[in-house]
Image (tube, rainbow, N blue to C red; front, side):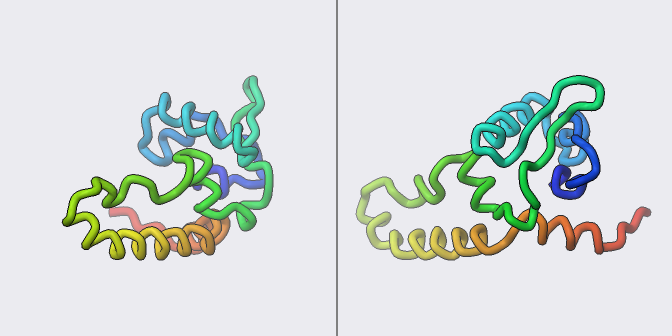
Length: 123
């Protein structure tokens, strides 16, 4: 999200991403590596360097990001092979389908636009 909010302005340093999401810096580096490998972000070294999206955030879906970082979506839910799992398997299948539909139809750019338009309240 931090990269989407900065799209077209300047590269974003890893520590800014970590601070924005309250995420450990080492984890940010790992995720950025995966996103670079998938062609979603690029990086530049140096003082004026950082990370930036390779295309308009409106063309990057949450499904793109999930697959880049996690691999194929939906594995592991309700697949232990016992009788209870076979009964509930249709529920997990529907959860996966519905979640995947949402991830495929919502773009990072849409979420960033909503965030940019929402007022921030500080107490």
